[in-house]
Length: 239
Image (cartoon, rainbow, N blue to C red; front, side, top):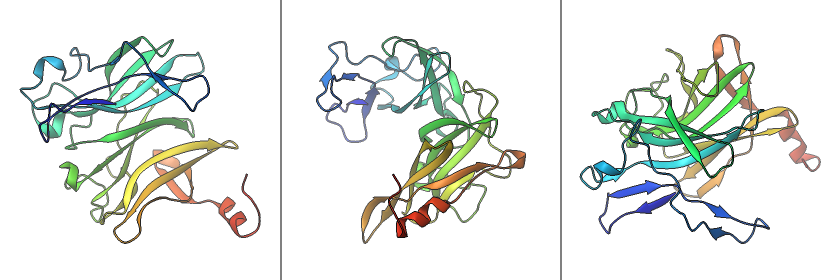
C-alpha cells in the first residue's frame, strides 16, 4: 500500500503499488507505480480527494483460483455517504497480476465503521471471508458476542466472488474485550486450514499466536479450536 499523506495528520490517499524480485530478497519498485487506485464506478476514489481527507485502499490479499484467475480482496469504501454503510471489502481480478479489473464489493455489510485485513478461502464446501474490526474502528454493538470489543468477523458465500453475508446470530471467529485480539491470517497445511492471530499484550508487546485449526460446522458456522498438532511441541519438531 502506498500512502500520500500530504503532510496532514489523519489525511491520506491510499493506492497499491508493485514490487518485483528475482530472488525473493531484493525487490524493485515498478516504474508504473501506483498501479491500482479505487475504481470510482464502485468505490470512493481520486475525485473526492483531498476534500474527504482520506481515500481507503489497503490490506490487499490475493487468491489464485483453479482456472488461473487471480482475485484480490482489499479494504476500501463504497460511495455510500454514511461511514457505517461505506466500509466494504472490495474485489478485483487479473490474469497477469499487472492488469486488474475491479468488481463490485465482495462484502458490503453496512454495519462496521471500518472492516479491514480481509482474507477469503474455501472450507467445508463454502467460501469464507474474514475481516478485522473493533470498537476503535467505530464498530460498536456489531458483534454477535456482546462481550467482544475487537476481533475477526467472518461471512459466507457460495462463490469467491461473493456476495458474502454474515450469519444473523454468529459473526465472531476471534474476539476479546481488551487490546489482545488482533487481525488474523490463515494457511493451508497438510489439507487443513490453520489460523494465526496477532496478540497484543500491553506488558509483553505484539506476538503471533500458535495455530488454531479451523472447521466448518453445520449451519455454516466457522470455528477455531486448539490443534492436536501442538502436542508435538513438547515431543518433536512440527516441520
